[in-house]
Amino acid sequence: MPLRLYNTMSGKVEEFQTIADNEVRMYACGPTVYDYGHIGNFRTFVAVDILQRYLRQSGFRLRYVMNITDVDDKIIRNSASAGVSVKQYTVKFEKAFLEDSATLNIEQPILVRATEHIEEMAQFIAKLEKAGYAYRAEDGSYYFRIAKFPGYGKLSKKDFAGMEDGARVDVDEYEKDSARDFALWKAPKPGEASWDTSIGPGRPGWHIECSVMSMAELGESFDLHAGGEDLIFPHHENEIAQSESLTGKPFAHFWFHSRFLLVEGEKMSKSLGNFFTLRDLVLKGHKPSSIRFLLASVPYRHQLNFTVDGLKQAAVSVERLRNFQQRLLNGQFPADGSQAGIDLAQETSQRLRAGMDDDLNTAQAQAAIFDMVRKANVAIDAGQLGKNDATALLAVLDQFDSLFAVLKDDDAPKIKCIVEWAQAEGRAGEISKELLEAFSSQPASDGDIQEKIAAIEAARRGRDFKTSDAIRAELAAVGIAVEITKDGVRWKRK
RNA sequence: GGCGCGGUACCCAAGUGGUAAGGGAGAGGUCUGCAAAACCUUUAUGCGUCGGUUCGAUUCCGACCCGCGCCUCCA
Image 1 (tube, rainbow, N blue to C red):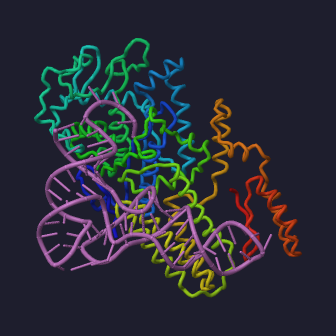
Image 2 (cartoon, helix red, strand yellow; image 1 turned 180 degrees about the vertical axis):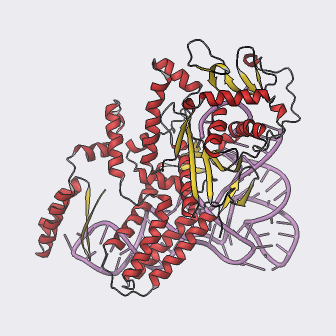
């Protein structure tokens, strides 16, 4: 079954088709690095990550580029008030973005930065001017003349043909021919960062960077362009106008947009007090894997209600999957099984693909994997599964996790980094009590733990439960849970 | 006002013109020295409201109510 994706341009779910063979050329709008990324940003980046992962899992070769917007009004304002250069300012938040992405197991694309392509943008604008699509204002700014591009509005389904500008033109923008025309290039203002280029001094407008960098990296037409739903208009509409007016060719063939999320049932905003960065959530004690799982639980085109309760539920769900994986890895299985596990694995693998093929229905994919977990547990309890069955089931878990990326128990070191960052930034007060306790106690080394586990096993063999329980309590105090199973004593970090 | 999305059990959340996935939580049980893990049973005659089409609608159509998004740079 082929992959079907919703294409914002057509407004329909369509079969995904590439321009050339098996190769997907994909561009995603990345962050403007003026602050730490919030959970809404990461909903989009996780959605795009899952798209990217699924394309590769489906056998496509992928060339995947993401931009970093490292110059814009907010950056200029914030860096000026901080008394540092634009570069000094953005480097910090770009680093934070990359760290946060890694925290959420988001795979890193090819990154391109706006400030490293300024002259290319200037040349692009010069070409637009020559072709009559752009004009220079008296102060040296350049604007795009949307009246020259008949397709303007085709992505966002807006009809600009009948719109009269009238007399209500913004006072600040009196130099524009039409109020709808957008800035390609902004003339320098005193004290603001500016670049000297072949079209004069100034700085780029927001949209031009994506046209220039995507075409430089991926060609004049490419397969897939992704971003948050707010970018449909004006950002992506403007990219299309700039690019297609110059090349005369379709810009991106598929447009992928993820829906905004709600936090505790309301639009996230600083005034409502429900505005969270990824780091805020981790400091409150939520695991990165819980956050990623919750973000991935709701298909990308649906509004997701991000709640603390949901995070707790996600944590338990991830735990259930990890427990199952451990059971397969550590359990004793006879050499010959019933074939039931192999059949179940095959069926589940197909359900996973069917769900994902259906416009990345991650909820269906999760339902498939949980069905498998339950059925496989029953079969293991009944002693029906052999080594081959376990191997097949593990492979399906891998298939699942190569998209969802939550099974590896790597939360602790990530949390530790964020705790240390908070302490270094003077934000130690935001660290939850539980985390502080967990990281203030001397972390037990795996070797120490193994020793104590051995002591527990020895004590239990002698039915000395007092001693074994005492050691268990000791381990529990440093965040190690000990479980007694038929196959032996097992431990995990909480 | 224009364009668009959604309202499914205590919570999150799939889905279909033919009788409601999955996860969490709750209750009861099995197993266990205990705990954990795991499993079983159980929790929507019901899918915002009211009409209509149909043998049959949660699923299609209409109206209404509610929530949300975009409509000058917020993912």
